Image (cartoon, rainbow, N blue to C red):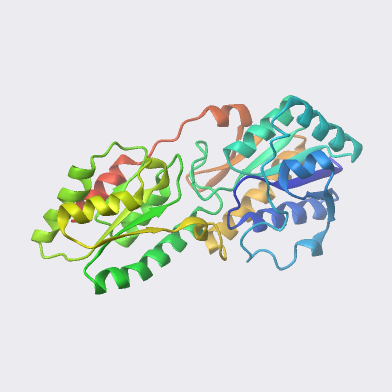
Length: 322
């Protein structure tokens, strides 16, 4: 391929810039022209491109967010919008596209691939919910952000003998809540993959730990469980007598300087997408990690995979948090 494009789509994730940097530099070092697409599929439709070279990605590896910006495009979800994007790609000589994002972004890549524009997906999402992939870019940074925030909240929680109910991201997946909950020593963890009963799994656990002279509590809740944490806090306080507050971390979880793991993984994935796939005229793939190795899957196969939570890890969390 002589010309490729790279875009970031969906929710931003720390490490996306490191992936963009790796894509651009690998391509440039191998004589391939790179166009950066501004604001995802919206920019692909409208030809909002910037020429990228070795220096255009200098000093971005340590930055959160995405240099190329991100947006969700309702127009691209239509056949007319996709055809516009395809025409724009052909007009600019784009022979392949690297898409950095989550499963929604990959569905767009799949649709382009079906229509003759080879795409390679790189998993960039804090939720770690891409089924074909053990680890997604941004996950480690997000976990560390949650841990640091909850550690600070704990100071107040402990000082006042309170319970704090912390809501973390994870609309359809509980990986953040489960692992962060273990890291902060949460008394209870509520995730969408495992059924729960507030009375049994939260209130009775708190009462049990009270008998062991514990006076402050942390409850970690994934946003995808459908529980109003403010109402849950009132329910806990009424049932236990422990003053309880809700804390919704929100979009602070998305930002910040990416960790070493996210920078290295993003670099490996970006390099692989160009060197091992597009340079060999291979498209319609998703780059993934399996047991620490970089691999790739057919994009259609990847989207049909299902990812399950580690129930053994959840059981460990329940046994060590009393």
